Image 1 (tube, rainbow, N blue to C red):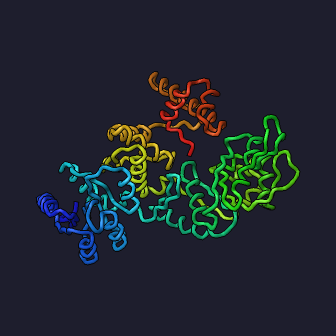
Image 2: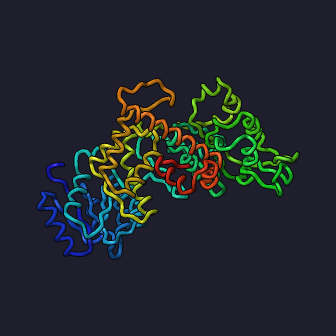
Image 3: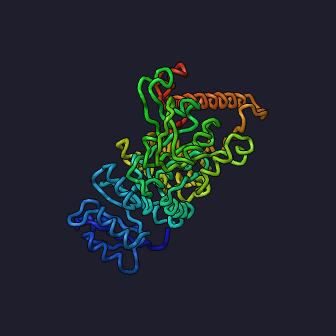
Length: 463
């Protein structure tokens, strides 16, 4: 911690200001106070700027959130911790969206305040953005957000702003879980089509015949069970945007039909000879090795060049580790609001474990980790989970020839293979039923409750 950090306390209660000044000065902090949001704003407009602001949420005239928005507008990098006697997760989320660094519920223990100050005023904290929210967070609806907290993601945001205005296909590339759907939604939100429909279709989840009817619809009598006509996703998305997720896994027989839509913006429903003309912005996402797929003829070259008019490559989380603290706090605030829980603090030890973990599952893995941490509330268990995963030797192939040296290793290997096979079977069943859990449970011949338990156990998610 620096020699004498400077803290500004903002509260409309004189008694609270006196108490906080005494509490902080005993710990050798330099302390200023302000009794209103207006006074706080006047103080931070002048030099020197405080290292941290402790801001009360409930104040007359300008409340804490309004004051926070003004403070961050004048000093974008200012660290502001919200203090409130109201333990409302929705307020935490709102504070995060306004750029709060952290949130502390009154009354609090001195140890809680000490931990918070150490976390945000230590030299390590100054090197990393650990804000609860961020100026560049974009609300995309459906509880989804785009968060740019690294140079790479800010460059991608700038690139997307240019791409969004141009009505051409965009190919989104990156590992599984890096946020390709989030990026697609951002493109849609920033485009002239933002008020129209956005739909996502998982091209790997359905066989060719079902995928065709899903995309293009069908007429009554087109096949057994087609009692009435049904429009496809392209018709529903007319004037809007469609995301073809995992387009690299689309059956080759369907790729030619998709190419026709890209070229002519028209298609025919199953069982119909008449053409349907649509105006749809097509976005496609994939994590496959494209050169290999082209060589193996699993991806048509002409379709690839049509989709790749513009492309955006999303880096994996391990290449943008500076985003991890912001992401954790963002997920923590979201899930705390969803499950009506108080957000848990992020200690330096847990932060270090998160920063060193490789996150092979990227944002999806991080999101599930935060969810488990919030629900279980055990920091030591969360750290042990990360260390165990980091120390484990991954199996590239289930039939690999790695021979264990001890009987205990053999048991672990067999258990790991069993879990891996179970995960693959469950994921396949979920994808084949378009993530209908009841149908997937029936196909797997297990109870619905057992399937839900397995989904939680293995951290499976359909995002």
